[in-house]
Length: 332
Image 1 (cartoon, rainbow, N blue to C red):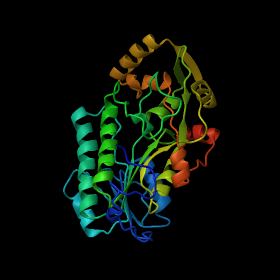
Image 2 (image 1 turned 120 degrees about the vertical axis):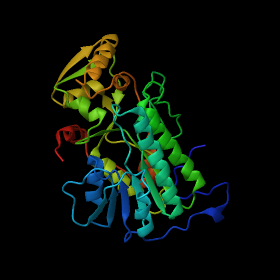
Image 3 (image 1 turned 180 degrees about the vertical axis):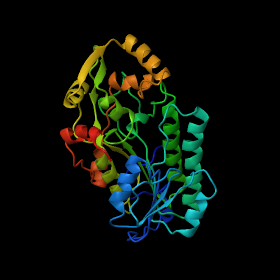
Image 4 (image 1 turned 30 degrees about the horizontal axis):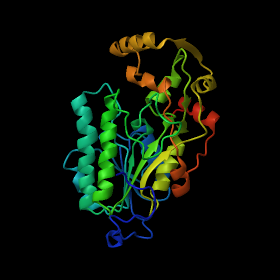
């Protein structure tokens, strides 16, 4: 059973197990894992104007605002616990998920799964009242038999043909399990559609190609969201009382051909069988950052219903399609 997506929840009908929600936690710091990533830095800059922000990331934070505290740590190391021991936190936002399919599979799994397990232990032990985990709509997977719009209750099948997504699915499932095991903590899982912007992810990298390949005979409907609308959704998820799973979408969906056309770049249609082989070779020789399993995202539909996020969190994208697509050329 998956967590319900409502602000007030009882577990097994026992209201006495409800967390006591502090009415105002805005003076307490928010801890962001993966703060040095491009999305993490944007979130930190968004939040630090109104509340204290602490970051954990093993990378350095270039251009860090003076009032943001950054701990250059590996989330899996015991030193991370010192941050929780010495700080009373309002919330933890987990962005520290590795998405690089070139990284060794064992390291990839350890970073994503073991890292989150450690984090959940600290959140529970130090009684952090809010946890926000950024997942992805990719966990549902692009499939020929998908309905037009997937709700939060749809099965997570994204790892069937793309092994690197299995870690993300496991992260999502760990967060769901924590929701039920730890009702004192308001757990929110956000599943945004394809994020476009200065982020270095497959959708943005694909649309930055000088000549964008599409598949002959396929033109699926797609959903994209501006990076700053994802930041806004995370900020809304931090509100006391919000909990559950939320699909997060941007402007209305559009055909892939139109999305590619909006970039102003050239396009070439390739038969699927040829595209698979070409991309595998390019990936093997490090001539592309677009792994072959990602091809299914330009072949099949994988769109989500974001009604719950709009209703419960009040999320509404502030950027239209033109602004969202142009964000791929942003420089952070």
